Length: 474
Ligand code: FRU
Image (cartoon, rainbow, N blue to C red; front, side):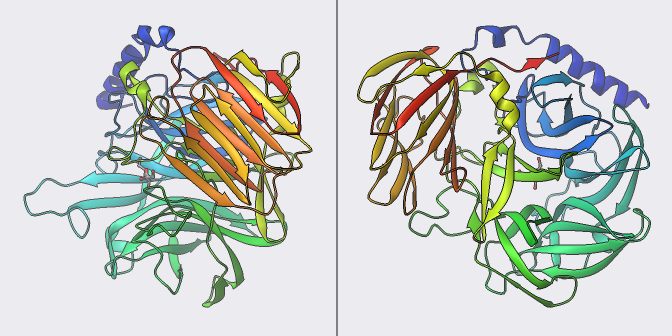
């Protein structure tokens, strides 16, 4: 370990141990992974390794608004009891000195192969950091599950195809037969978001294979790609930037969603179905998936978005931290559409159930799962008389009636034919709504003033409310 690495690790330990004011913070979440202090963004390196789930995340311990990125690390045997393992991946080499950016994990030979982007910003007056002034290196870090054993820079901007800006990043790597494949998100010189596909025989030497793109431009940059098989379909998941709002669609600053890929994307003999958003709420971005030992395809997203300052804010900034990861969701396909269901492990957090009658007012602790089944008509759920969750005339809406709790968040909707079932997870300052067993999902943050909130349901379904226990985090 060089002395810069040691110094950085020590400084992070000190700052993490000084986080006293978080204890008096009513917006800390009970069953979501958060940064110990400072800023969190994308989930990284998701994997199941030697009997444990490992979740890394983009982490800026020194600044609640981001900037220099590290990888923080949690692990768990059951997705409920967690251990925080600190910050294994640090920007401590010339090829990653302005941030160890997002990436993925490949498990082989009892090792974790962590592929990520080393961000480098050169200093100079005339750089625009789009076409020049930035290095986006593809790096392989090998880990034993706890520590990084080695880091090697595999590709630099010189190696990428010539018609690209400096924005190429977020490798997702997988093995297929005896070959390895990698997708990277990129921005071409014509400001079009596309995917670069690479192939390797040894995990180290990579050859460019193909571009995967939407023939009609869909945004100027595609971040955090993921490509996987789900129920015999090939899914390309991306987080595009620069997509214009279209009615209820694409209302956030940046989007995340997926295409079903038909044909052979390794040659040019492929086509993409329509892009579908994966989450309709205000706070969701950069999802990644992995396969676990039960062969479940599990998705975790960043419970947040970058560059939201002109639209809304997060009150936790006052407390020295910002953002979280969403609850893990299991994916499946029904009629060409991805459905997302909360992992069943969360049921173990349920305390004794409460029956909630329709059209009555309840004052409850703001950490619960609300299940509403057999909904026959329209329904309106109100939290604190300000957050409105509603299905009416084929439109599902999540909206804030005033600026009190939403801090600038307004209204998001999706058109659906019916709403029979709702499963809603509320965790002090977050809400995740699963409609019809995950046909649509809305995720949002909100900032109530008390640990207890007022709940009222105006509908005709059967309501069950489970107050929830907390994750244990060592
Ligand atoms: C997505 C993203 C990635 C990048 C990372 C940096 O939120 O911009 O493209 O690798 O965050 O933290």
